[in-house]
Length: 71
Image (cartoon, rainbow, N blue to C red; front, side):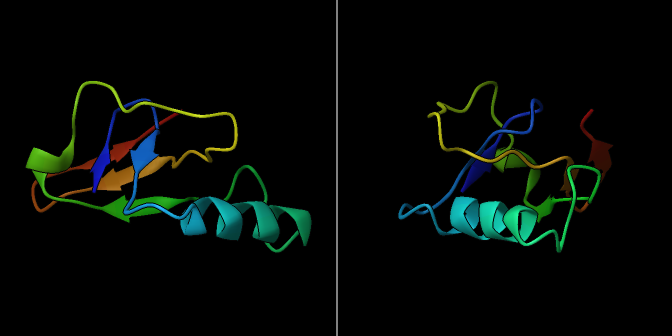
C-alpha cells in the first residue's frame, strides 16, 4: 500500500509479506543481499512508514518513473 525510502513498507495487513521474507531467509533460499523489490506508483512513496519489530524491509522500489536501490 505504501513504502518509504528507508525500505519500510505498509501492506494490506496480516503480515504475509513479512512471514514470506522471514521464511525464505530461514530456509536460506534468499540472503540479506537478495533484492527484495516492490512496485508502486510514485504516490505510494511516503515520508515515513510506521514500523513494528517483526517488519521486514525491502531494498528496491520500482515506479513507472524510477528505480531506487535502498542500502
